Image 1 (cartoon, rainbow, N blue to C red):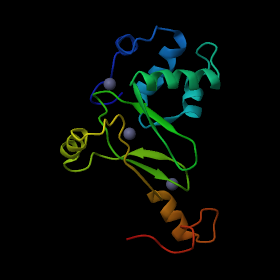
Image 2: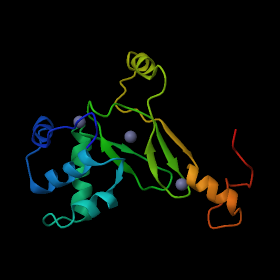
Image 3: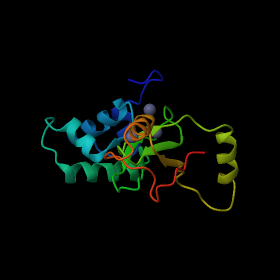
Length: 164
Ligand SMILES: [Zn+2]
Ligand SMILES: [Zn+2]
Ligand SMILES: [Zn+2]
């Protein structure tokens, strides 16, 4: 549980106009209690054993949550997307994706982020989603590559170091 608390499952489903099914409750509970964004595969692992639920059901539920603005989806280069709560406990923030171990982590909000998001939102375009995603190597994978440059994890394509 996050130190900032979390949403009530029933209220969240109600507000999104979604009826309460055991499967929706299971998926939402997994997302509310997640310590980092989860892929559909990870969600399935966490909810399996809680009634009849399969991959197709999880994807369908995630789509309904996304349509109801309950969750946000974070796309990655590898096509395995991640999901996290889009509630007041979890305001928009950037994400970091490691291309080697394919892990995704949340980053703290950028300085003045609220202000510049506000400015964009006041523009003529009707902005519905915001995604700020960084891709690279996490600390663990960077150290791994430094130790074993010819190992299974490879450096940036082209062999050129891209560290600033
Ligand atoms: Zn919440
Ligand atoms: Zn990594
Ligand atoms: Zn996040």
